[in-house]
Amino acid sequence: MARNIDDIQREIERTRRQLASTLDELADRTKPQNLMDDAKRQANNRLQDPNVQKILAGVGALVVGGIVFAVFRSRKKSNDLKEIQRMLSERVLP
Image (tube, rainbow, N blue to C red; front, side, top):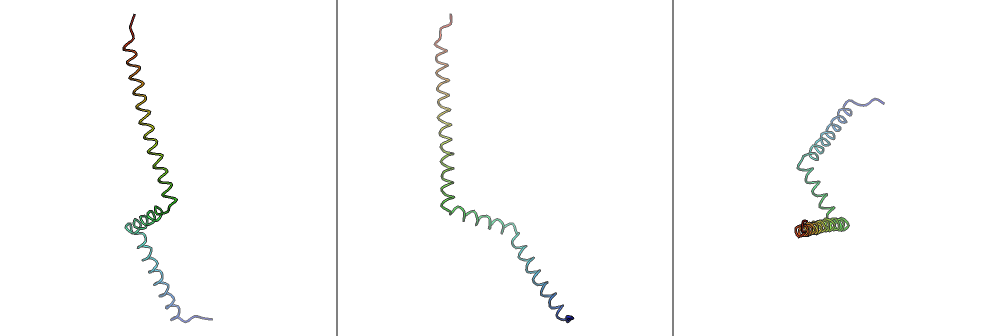
């Protein structure tokens, strides 16, 4: 069955409007500000998750523990070096 020229033109116009709407939506989604807002929203949603909060707290505790360990280890080495220096200074040379 042959299609009417008016039907074809209406279909072309409808397709053009749909394409224009799709392109407008894509342009809106890819604006840097909109991308940044979406990323912030996703990050905030993830940070509200109790499991993520527990993981972050654990990582924070490990980092603090590592720093405390490093400070105490550094102080011990410093004290050991001072003790060695003191012992060497007290040593009598023949």
